[in-house]
Image (cartoon, rainbow, N blue to C red; front, side):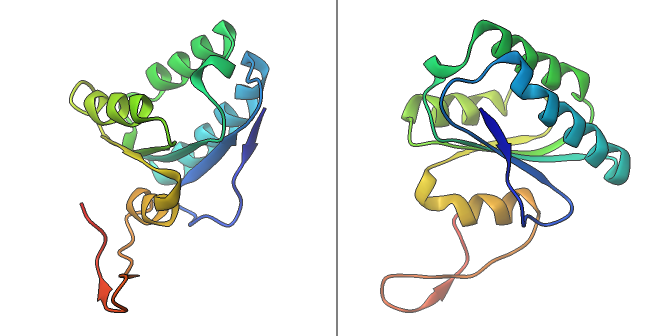
Length: 136
């Protein structure tokens, strides 16, 4: 299942996957991505994986690839949030292959991912109680 993440900055869209994900789950994603690109001219996108890559059906992977190809020129910033090192490493590598910037984040860094995707600077309080900018 894919659900839209609410309460995000207006210049981005975000989605959370859980359980089994099928091609039909991507209908919402395509609609919201098209709307954002129409309104802003670019695509700032966050995908929070609360499941494993094995939970995506073949149809879901095809829809995911179609989403990427359909908006290849508009990709601006994309964050994939997951605790899978494989997903994070693939996302970081993928950024070298196509237009736009792609970054993988761990779930604990969700707010940093939102700030980066939305192109907003945030300040995070470190363990010593001092404010610092997130790592790039």
